[in-house]
Length: 485
Figure 1 (cartoon, helix red, strand yellow):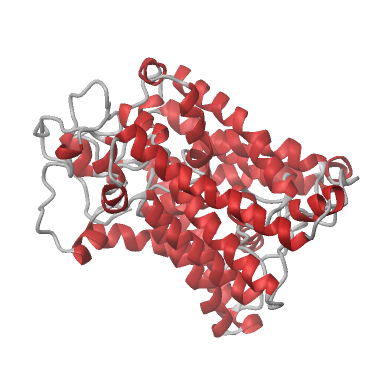
Figure 2 (cartoon, helix red, strand yellow; figure 1 turned 180 degrees about the vertical axis):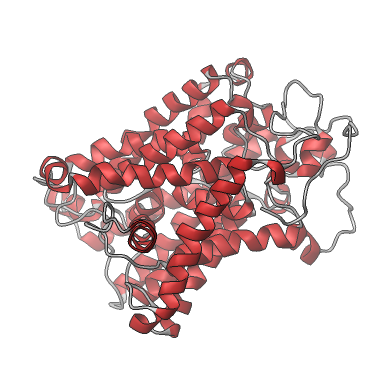
């Protein structure tokens, strides 16, 4: 249990203003969840749908295929286009690096972690095609929309996320699995065997890494420059000439909120759904796997689940109110049927991929904006992961989407038909369950971490999960640029 008198961390001025704290320091998960929930609400208010990003990335890859390589491996299925929400998410995360005056390019990963991240990007990308959406689609959109398919994707993926975590620990890269790195926190905890800092090397200069130069060029040209250029000057899907500047702004605002909120917290769907599993494991299990104690405390205190549930409850209540008032519909996360074999098969791939990347898709966009090497490595993996589907779409669709497994789209719809009552009453009950999970996540932090609610709301994750330790001065001069990728 954390001694709350030791909080906040050494080096945090008690007289620090709230405004300075918000912009210069990292945030707790719940506050990131507020921004993610707000992003979903704004997107739904404008489009009557939750945020979708995976197909948008495929469309941007298709632009670069056409104008750089003259091929149509992805474009044969996905029309070349620009997705302004993704672009804005990258910029929102970059804004965090600028305001905090620190990118994460200084984090050094060994080759095993980079290989896992690449494999994770590939598996995750292919999994999105089978599951008809990524974890953001299903967890942050489908669960608030009460989707049967989204719950199946979640539940089918949880055990495989844990298996992926075990593989990472067996590979000796458990020390890299943390909510977020900040240079000040890493320096403050050097030499503590309970909280290893393998990503810190005072002699590492990311500007001298050929791999990072190549991968940053891939990011800038393929995902950013070409889609934006043709999105502003051309007639591709989502271009200004097609939808107008006002629509670009509507699509960009949720993206900025997503990128900023996730980059400020390390918010991700993968750690959110893995946190409850910590209640069935002991701290010694994490230590033997080389996982920092701060990660165990983060999971066991359900801190990621707080952000996850804040976003879900916010969005769910808005959908419920908007729908009951007759202003909008309940978004469909599954397709014509409520469940397909693809959802069952895709969930495990999404879970494994998200863990290997140290982030789901939308968190990977935030990590790209912050300059993490694992996110850069995962990006070409995303492209390769699309290819089995785009090259063999008809054969794959016949298997995974050939026959629906249920005619019901939402849980309230199914419950009203099988157990009686109205769909609206079951929707209310569903919302109460979500609110109960949200309350439980905060209660878990109070119980396990021994914190008061005020501390949970005010302190950021670093201040909560690290115990007070003797500060060890770093050795050498660190070649870390303040806001560079």
